Length: 458
Image 1 (cartoon, rainbow, N blue to C red):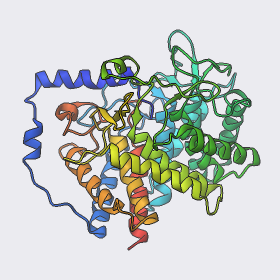
Image 2: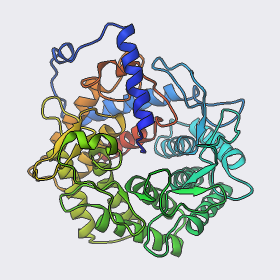
Image 3: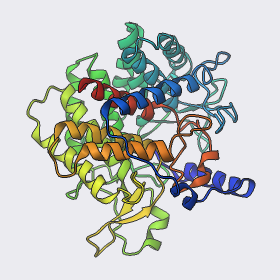
């Protein structure tokens, strides 16, 4: 998930407005409640299935735009449509993936293949650039392309998620048109975004596919966020289209992320020059970090998510006895739990930093966005199966994380997930349930993965 200053400013500006309009709920009031942590697998399974069912009922049919196609983006905290309803390729494709994935997992979601088909038609007929190929990044409610900074920009991240949704839709529907479009998108990325000299993918491209090889508007040309999700999306495609070139690119990307992006301590550098040299500043004091936080910090959510995504890619590639990927994935999860875990109430913080001359990490952003909490939940349960006797006790951490999510992230009044934990930002409960950056992909994937694992041990 891409984090940017404009989006964060919107979130916290909304919080400030609501502080003035509503009686603020204090952290002290929240902590007055006492809870008993649930550890019984059957009980946790029941709770998760209930949350998942409720989540899909909230999102659909509400988010389906039956007039202009695709899915609505802007939904307020009470689950009411409110806003411009611009449509981004990432959000639209993730809806396709989430509904197709859930339909394959739960037979009772018999309506979801139709919801996925609705989104597929929008991707194919509206968001695909019929002149130059590749998917547009952003269109308005009616499907008109929105220029960003005066020009039409495409990116590898968005096109990768289009592949993700198309591959899953093909899997559930058997519609070869979707698979062919996924293949075409892969080939478009390979021709325009792939860097044959240094490997990896240029994130930003012009409409006609010319990559910005030195970066775009002060953003470096390559980054971990687009890379880990290209890895994820290629994994999904490879499961239904075991093409040799795709296998080569997927393998290469796994090695780049695992062997070059992950630091010795077990966290990811965030941005890179074309030759994959990391962009870091080695600051000494917190004040120095303010203007470049987005470029250089420890993103605990991405780290714990990447551990899972690397193992998923390794499995899809059939890499048996891949002890290197397993070791580094565990190292990333461990680094997050040992350094980014809130020992008071649970959950993982959004950002940390190793300041120059300090061996211990500093927490520089104490907020806890919803997606990173779900990713931590998923990875902890996975690690509990792989390392049941580890001293960290991953299953206990999984249970603690689920308790955190139930207490501070799930809206028991209106349903769904808050943008972030109300233990840190109480009035974040009045911010949107849906935006172009907030859908149900992380939550549905994480919950379904956990439910599947819990059932397999039943």
